[in-house]
Image (cartoon, rainbow, N blue to C red; front, side, top):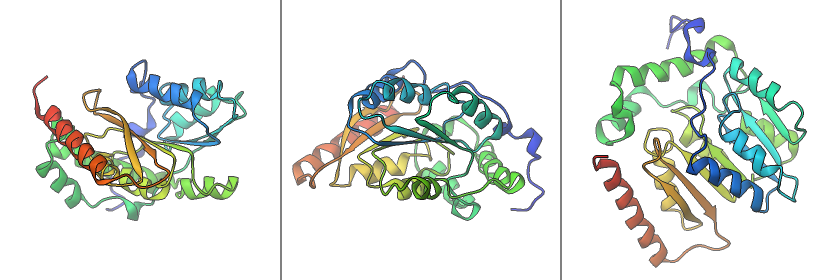
Length: 258
């Protein structure tokens, strides 16, 4: 993609946006898990300005007896500035204005087109050129701002973290799978937008992973969310079969009219 892409000042990433995970079932679940589970390190990918899922994490973690640390990643500079200002007085909150992936790690347009045409997802609420425009916008933002990449690896290196205890994947629409490959093994993996390109395949992979249990699923809340918990040992065939049934029901509910 050439440098003649969308002008930076016109990018949606240069604007503050209203939170999506806010005062709903997923917000409540994030807050409650953050407050009650045994945690040391929590990673939030896609913190935006900190008014949604970040707030849920902070409220919950503030009550957690283990004094966990929260690491927030936000690529948008205006949103990051608001995020950093909001939580400057919370020493357990660490904010990073970095990209989780490089330009080379973004999917090719052909992959997005294939998903759009073959999977009856929430992306079909938007014209395909609009969706491809989002992909171009994300790539051009990294190219034009020169924002550093490798956020997850940097956080791990800076803080001596091998595996995070809890991770929320809710960043770029096109980075979910690449981000999952960098956090796999976390005790809790929380996914937003499971009915779009972002986390559709991640959810499918976790349903098939014998080391993870699906503990919460909300296919009809916005674009869907799921929460998985890592097991101490692989689950048996019966449990995997049951979760395949859950997956089938999830697909059926997505196709059913509201």
